[in-house]
Length: 474
Ligand code: MLT
Ligand code: ZN
Image (cartoon, rainbow, N blue to C red; front, side, top):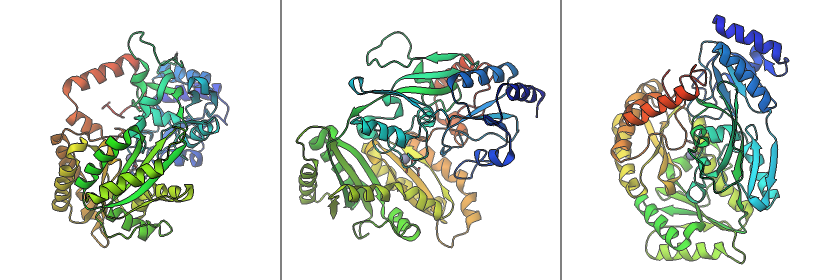
């Protein structure tokens, strides 16, 4: 350990008891590896603060000694954003014990919550107050608010409610030097200078530590209808999307596309989760309409819209969930795809977005690219097609050579991301940069934007202690 890190650790040890500052290797081990087991590091210690004051005290000490700090929430990052490096010099800052909902005010439609709250708990608290907190991710039961905001998480309701950034009214952030920036307001209108809080949303803990946020709440939907639809092509999906949007307006909350191959993986690896339709089409769609309007009947609206689309030849078979249990089963299908893919063996992941209008052409060219580049792989491209975001993942084919497959990772990644760039898209639509896409950011971000990012980093974290090596190169 460097002398600086050991001096910081000695001071931290004086300041915090052993239930708060953890050094046992067996307790550190699960925190030092990401959930996909692609990144493994070694931390000097892990701190589990219970309050903003404790985060502030810890950062003040680390800043003085230039000890690097890696914030960690539910450890569900796909990009290694919350995993320490191998030096053994970094402090893991785990926010899990800061899990209070400080305030929920239905009249203002806001909830003030701490960074360690589980997303599912926030959703439940909003529901109990007859409100909706609309961020929804498959990992809701384990991801935490701090991570959601630090990565500007997306998920399955972006079409209607936007990304995590759009759900934030204010933040409490501990800066790299330990000072606390407090903007936990509930105002919808506040035009007072630069929007400083937005810098920390999506910064992946590289500028400071989000400890709490005031969040926007919405009316609880009274009528929800969910359908599972068989489609002949991505082009049909896009045409159906346009119809659902123009007729359903903002009631269309989700539009999730899945290829047959993804559902076949479910069949094999999670056989208790069965699609309600035969897998005789190349694509399937899960779409949902929801509204808080009294007396609305989204079920009939969706039925009418799908019937009209079917008459125009835009879809094959379709089913609409008849009750909440059937609706949950449809969502479980969609949300189980990453797990089925994990069980199927190694996969090469690309989290990309392109303008919706060019999605069909992108999928055609991307599919050809995968076939040419990695014959050991099978494309499993699924995701939030309604907002242009697909998880353009490639799984190892049964019996194919795993070493040859993995050896193609960089070549394929370059080819896919170059194609995305050509289509005016993003190489990281919702999972962030972490440590896995730092090179990509250097390659694809405009030079001026990168320069401004580096200047912001320097201004807010002059010692470079905040999650070094993530988002930007050291
Ligand atoms: C999803 O939409 O299921 C997640 O973002 C996970 C993934 O990339 O596979
Ligand atoms: Zn996703």
